[in-house]
Every structure is written in C-alpha cells, then in structure tokens.
Image 1 (cartoon, rainbow, N blue to C red):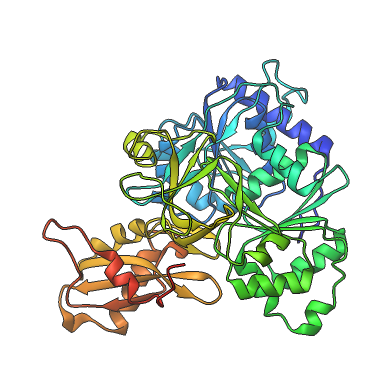
Image 2: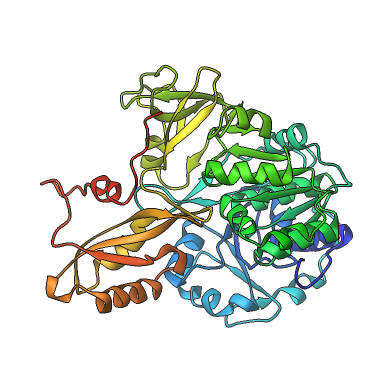
Length: 496
C-alpha cells in the first residue's frame, strides 16, 4: 500500500481468501451466487475479490463514493447474499441495511456497525485451505448506460479450474510480458474494471502490486523509483497532472525501471500523449475496451505516432462500423462501433438494454454505443462518446441520475445534464435548467441545485455548474434534443 506501507504477502492473500471462501460456503453460497463489497483501496480488497473468484461466485465491487440510494440499488439489484464494507465507510454501508433484504450476511473490516459482523472474527476460525469445489467465478461490475439506472454486466461463468487462464490474462501476457519479477503500479480505485482485473491478472503471475490509496502525481513518480515499478496503468487526466508538475520535479525521479505504461478509459488528447512519449519513451500503450469485455483494441507507441488519435486495432473481436440500419460502412465513414467474434454478455435483469446493444440486423454483433471510423489499415478512431455518457477523469458518469434528482426539485421545471469540455478532466458535468420562474435564475439557485444534487448523489456525478434557459428543446412527444444543447458547448471538429 503506497501511503501506509502495509504489505500483504502472497501467503496472507491465499489464506485470507480461503478463509472467506469457507465462510461463503457456510453461509450457503454456491457457484453462481452473488456477493457485493464496497471498500476503499483497502489492504484486503483483493483478498475479498479472490475469495469470491475462487468460490465460483459473481462479485460486484462498488464505488466507495456512492450515497445511500445508489448503493442500495446496486446491492439489491445484483442479488447479493453477502455484503462487505469497512469502518471507513460504515455510515453509508449501514444506511442500506433495511433497503437490501436479500443480504443474509454483512461483514465489516476494521470495526463494526449495526447489522454487521466483524470481518476479522467471522473468518478467524475458518480453514486456510481451499474449499473442495473451488472453481473460477467472475466479476459483475456496473456499467452506466444511456437510459435507466446502471446495470450489471454479467458474463457467463466458465466453472473451469482456478488456474485456467482467461482471455484478458492471455492478452496481458502477449502484450506486456509480465512475470513474477514484475511490479505493477495500480493508480486508481480498485472498484473500477481495469484496476481490479489487471491487479488480479498480475497477481496470477506472481507479480508485486503497489496500490495507491489515492492518486497524487508526484507520489506516483516517487513510487516508480522506490519500488522499481515495471508496469503501470493510467487514465489521461493523470498524465495531464504529471505533465503540469514543474520540470525539476519530474526530473527528480528515476523512472528507468518502467517498461510499460498502459492507459485507457478515456480519450487522450493528442498533444498530451505526444508529450508522454517524449518524456517516457515508446513504452506508452493504449487499449480500448469496455466493462462488457466484448472486444479489445490495442496500439503501441510506434503505431500510434504513425496514426495519431487512434485507439488501436482489434486483438479480441472483429470491429464493424455500421449505419443506423446496421449496414457496414467503408473506411473513414462514421458510424456505430460493433464487435463480432468476441465474448458475449448480458445486462443483468434488463433484457431491453441487452437487446439494444445488439446490431439491428440480428447478427449478434454487440456495441458499447460509441461512434467512430476505421482507416484503411483497420485502426479505429472514436469520434463520439457513448450517447451522452460523460467521462470525467476516466470515470463514467451517467447524466440521467443527476437529471432524475434535479427534476424533482420544486424550483426546476426542466433539466438536461451532459458533459462539457474540461482541460484537465476531459469533461465536466454541466446542467442546463429551465427554472419554475426565470426570476429565480442566478448564482443562488445554481448553488442550491448543486448542493441539492450532492445530497443525493456522489459528488462526481453532480454538475459543477448550472446554466439557465427559459425552455429546453423538446419534440412534441417529449423527447429532449440534448444534442442541440450539448453542441453549443463543444467546439466543432472535423469529420475525419
């Protein structure tokens, strides 16, 4: 652990995860059942994940920044029978007890709260050896969509032996060549798909994982030097923050051990990536993939410099660019990005959303909703976000949640929430509000609405600013033309 220095050995990881796996079995959980956990970047975060994984369970890692309503929805929706949290998050964790009746066992690390058993005493007497029916489970993480609430991305369980390598591990080995001697720096919250999956994949190979409790640009550089980090993963906003450090600060640290800097999760501005390659050399790797796992594109520094702005070519799945009717388009024509020949997925409990991710001609191709084009060599370029999805510092923000909260405020007649350009974060959350009376419009109402939203949602999901209009563009059927609003805030870009 970067700040505390706490070390979790492989023996401790193995024994802790085995003890918890036995507790899951004693609670009646069998392969295919579900647990959820909400933890900060805790020393035992990965032990909890491994306990579920080696028990053949689905496990949902939940953002530690959520409020009561959001947390209760996910814990209940994923049908978790066990919920694990920590004393650092006790207030919000305990607030969902009455709202999550499916949960039959609640555990808390580092303390306790009403309705929770102390984790340490609950697992202490359990065997440190594997459960007899050990097999691989899978994460079921929640991916924000374009309509409705977030939904769990549910893969099929393979039920294969624990040491069977999956597609992601094989891709990591092929692209980045980690080994038991590697040191992987995890810079982001572990509840996100990439930090969780990459940390567990590197652990499969015996590598050391250095986990930052929270990101700090200079500390990240210091950790690379101190631990002789070989592999790392970033989002573009982290690059921006490191590049803004004074030259003498950036030059202070020995980064010579770093062989691989991987980034994803959000578009990286071309000038930022150019500067990172100038600074770190041709060790910067980019991939494009989603929580859904239906495809994986990759580009290294050399190819990127020859195709600036690309997110790569497919290594898993085949990319198709299609128009609204599902017809495949030629190179450099913009359309929806679909994947074929990749892993399938469903959105848990939402057949309509699952079907909306399939191509209209019934070929079984799947999409994340992104718009882009391919060049003649098959490199993909993204030209739009998922429909109105806001990507703020590499974190997906679903605007409908803020719209739902603000729409019930007594002084709000109509509201639209979307992303606007932000130099450091990529995008920030903006609300455009039609007040009940334009006489109310002004800084006081803006502050009131932001505070109101933050009382119901995690701060990062809430608007940082509010503009006022005497009406929003809507079709007579009630459909909001959010694109017309959003385009006012975004500079025009060339079509290719």
